[in-house]
Image (cartoon, rainbow, N blue to C red):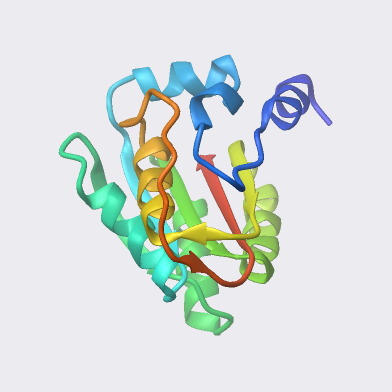
Length: 163
C-alpha cells in the first residue's frame, strides 16, 4: 500500500450519525477539490438514498456532470464503468451505492489504477443526509452539517475516485 493511499485510508471518517466530511478528507483530497472543476461521473443506486445523493450533486452550479450511471449487476453497467475508468481524460467519479456494488466498483477502479480519494460506509442514511453527502463530495459543503429525516434502510458506500 502506498503512502498516499494509507494516508487517505487513515484519515477517512465514517459518516453514520451526521455528515462532517471535510474533517475526514486528506489534504490531497481537499487540494483536489480546490482545483478547477473536472468532469464528474456519478454512480448511484436506484434507491431513495442514491437519488437524493444525485439531487445534491445536481443542485451545485459549479459541477460538470459528464455521465450518470445507475449501479447494477448486469454486464452493461460493468462495461460502461470500465469505459469511464479507462478513459484518457482526467475525471472524477463519485457515487453512493449499496455495499455489494461498491466492492465491484472498487475492484474495477484498482485494476484501472484510479486514485481513491474518499470511501465512507453508511449503515443508516436519511434522504437529506444523502443530499448533503453528494454536495460535500463535489466540494460544495465546507462546514459540518447534520440533517435529520426518515432513515433509509440498507448499507451504502460513498466514494470519490480520480482517474
